[in-house]
Image (cartoon, rainbow, N blue to C red; front, top):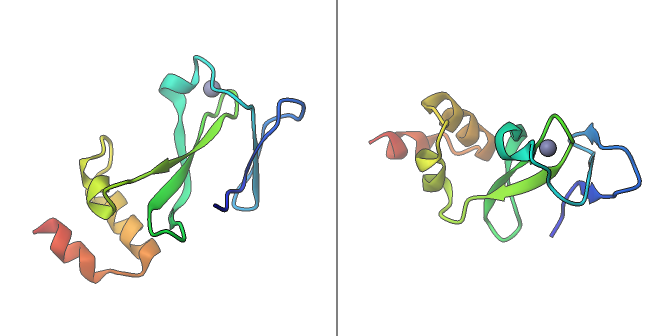
Length: 102
Ligand SMILES: [Zn+2]
């Protein structure tokens, strides 16, 4: 599993997406509300789409996976149609958009 996130308690949190993200090893209270998506949705070798989510306060970063694939995106809170289009652009499968919108 490739990840650009390095969990390190000794170094300061740092966002150098898409090359590297340095994150504290564990989440804090602030992470419950503040996690923000970073960058494009990516697909892991196994085929699961994911993106990086980072807390702008403390720098804690996780990868969020979508076990149900692209359909899972549609059910996610806060994902509007624009985001889905963005996602599909990332996949290079624009044809899927029509299928999802139907
Ligand atoms: Zn936080």
